[in-house]
Image (cartoon, rainbow, N blue to C red):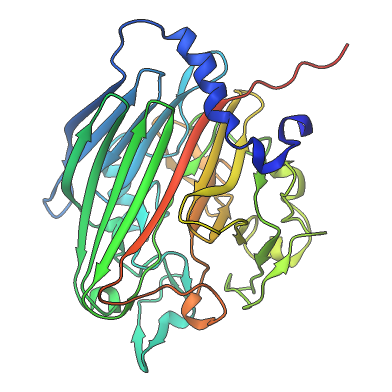
Length: 398
């Protein structure tokens, strides 16, 4: 295990090369490099039609994105034997997503905004004026209020296909006062899959008044396959030497501290379950992992390595690269068996891990954190890249 990760971040780029070597040989022939399909995906309870787009390449990777919530519903990817499985949790029909939204939402695969993560007391001050956001998690405003970006039907802005990539761009116009936020915010998210098994999420947003914005995607990953059980044996490495500790309400204390000597030290790879039950209050408050790590290497606008997830059983590897300064790792602590996925299996705690690239939680209350303020004439512009590969577990030495 450690040999695979021994060079840390320098090895992040190998996943794409490894998968190409395996799957190119397995899928040789005249198969088209990229395909893009568009189809209806049901109607919301209030009568809005939803579409789903399928982006696929010749290596067996397929991504499905729907207009409801700008949501990733499927990521099919081959394992080290060429077997393809869906590596994100979700539902077989639109009804599952709208029922989840009606319950408050666990944000399966959704684009989260206008402000992802938590805002303390559901209020913040901008330019001397106080704005109030609906409190959806105790006294916190979580993931954009009662009807955040995940609960809207987005507009299809455009689609595109080339010899090496397929993409769809979705747009949402959030009016001034939406969920209490100031300014009309126009947001675009482009989902793009290439022939190197890389899924890119490019976010842009502009506003007509000063506002705040923090966007992320909330896919729940299980590299063993949707419905395959716990991810405790999957191996995680996080490119971060510090994190923002939280209080009992899962709000940041406002400090940035070292991960050294804590259950949050993933600078070298560890099984997710190895320290999941550590008695540290940081683990006990959220009943698992649900903290923000400070991503190393934010020196350019090009995405930098944030995390690597590896499933020794299937051999699948997921590299996460981003321009965002933070990474929220969440071990699906709220899954309680009341959701059933396409496999017919109920989802329970630790059945997936979310790797949410974003700015830090509760940023408006912590001036030392990277700002999430956006003003007229500025463009919010962030990219996250999910690179899928394979790396079989090493054979034991004789």
